[in-house]
Length: 293
Figure (tube, rainbow, N blue to C red):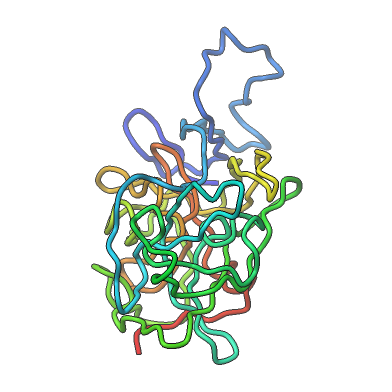
């Protein structure tokens, strides 16, 4: 559900939205393939978003940060036979559980959906960004929520326990600063948000949907590609330009008005960014966000 968008811009008319890779002229479709103009009395709207994909690696070097801090490059080391590959994603936030501190990010940034073993080293910066596997270990993979090829997913998230002796910057994120509260705020249509990510840095955007069902391309633990369906996701468009790009996966999405967390970025297209509701992420992992100490 959302407001209908016309050539003149966004209206106040509520509608059922359909996000598509591309629009096809009605003359090329049969009646069964066409989306009806109304469903149960509600108008429909077809929005071109492009094909959604996970935001994985990108060749954009990011710096080593000591103390470590959210909004920066992190990553794992691929096991054999792919150990000649390197990757990097984004350190989203600091989370706590049972007195321990964790890096919060995506499953595909920390665990590669089970291809990375629990207890494996996490590096800052990620190895793609010049991280050194001998000297830049900052955490170990602790747990992740599996991304399922069938049924509905709601989160792409994982935790890595911060290693003893690794200090964390008291400022929560570059250009964002300290969160105002450990409590999240629910995303809402029209909410103005921001994030700091590994690739595109600090960007601003606007929430355009809070309950989108999206199909996103992933790989399973054996490297086999599949399409995962995520239910009730946040969609964001940049203001101005793009809100995110490859390597920004794992970024914490923050409400600009309250400086409280609202989402966890994990995928997108050329025009739209997708985020999990942060409340769903925290509940799935049983953790609490930490503000600056």
